[in-house]
Image (cartoon, rainbow, N blue to C red):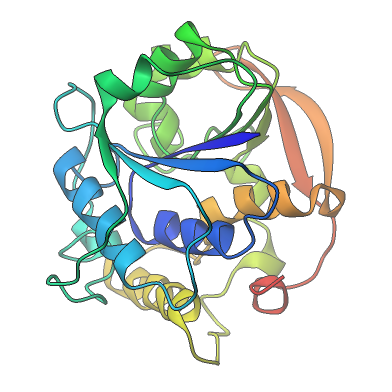
Length: 265
């Protein structure tokens, strides 16, 4: 099965991509669609390529990056949260990668049903894809039910394109909402993280920047969606309605291990 991942390449997207790629057995191909959201589309593309060039493990076969810079889409450049380059200012700008890059319009023409879909940003272009070819599995990070919203009354990914969000969640899905992520054992703001490697560097930088941005707590939001893909038994599913009336199949984290203990699992 092919895996398609939509990422807006802030710090938590980078951590999620790293975590996914190093455990990506079983997928015949992986397409990383670099979209606007936490950063502009051009910055998302640059960050995707920079991340792949800096990986400290071999890439799985048949990884591509999809360039969406020619397509209109919403974004906010959240430098206080994600750093001046949008990805924590951790990686050098001069690294190069041989990973192929394909334009979104060309790529969309090749879309076929039956893929797995992981959405980690606004759903503007996800709506375009699923309108052409439906996924067989759909997991996304976005939305909130009871947790306090973080952007204009909504979760950030939902807020940037509410219409696309409402359209996409009509498909069978699993939602990693703010309610999934914002639980005490997953908060690393007060405990930090030891050890070496790119993933841990990204997580530590996320924590550092929460003190600059004034966020209450540090949660590696998008990586929880990857954890669900890898370990669905860590979660319990329930159906809840959000403030717009969307019915979401929400994953609740029930393993109760701290994030510092599951980061490498």
